[in-house]
Image (tube, rainbow, N blue to C red):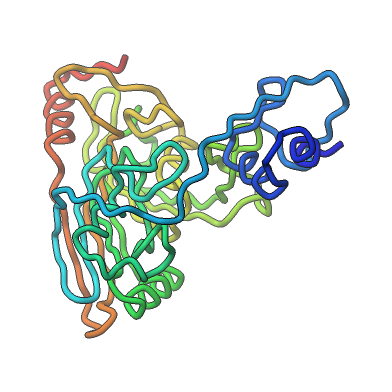
Length: 298
């Protein structure tokens, strides 16, 4: 029997659609391995299911101090700190950027989806830097179209493990869900993932690490992290695709990845908007430590 059908019949109160969503999110394991919904059970396997609470469709405003870089009636640009989740999801129902912006600008509640008001792109929890949100439906449609047309420019700064063989390069390989761990993304064979293109350029080289910039042509989940890890150079502090960084002199409080610049056309004026965000202190400390030759991974 298919895994999703078996679960729908044996887990009370959970629909097949909900089961499929749980499988896709990596909450189901068969004999300690993630499987797809179509996986066939033959009998005798151990099936483990984690069922997180259903997230309410109503987002509650949560006031907090927002590092606003720019704001007008149409858009708001924020310099997100590392550690802040952009929108509610499994395990993160409260304390999100979306809830904070909703408290700051209540009118955004009717822009986009109820759980992700105004959000047109996102940054991972451990990544810091610039993110734009739409405050009106008109701005939302414009920004979504610009992202689809790849006219939004995004430049990231990162510190990675190891020394690059090539100082400048392009990674053009598809990204999709990991075949065995559905929580992770992975480089996939052509035809099994979505096209993903990352450009990178070395900025500074250390004995065992490299400081680089990366720009995106596409915007896949975890794209920079997955692409750099596929080269053998995971982003420092990335426990999902690399390893932990645990140095008291330079705590990362996230991963060594920062969205340093962002450019787009203003939805109303059609003026080209360009923003930059300086490196946060956490990455300044890291670079100072590496320049002093004292950086040691755990």
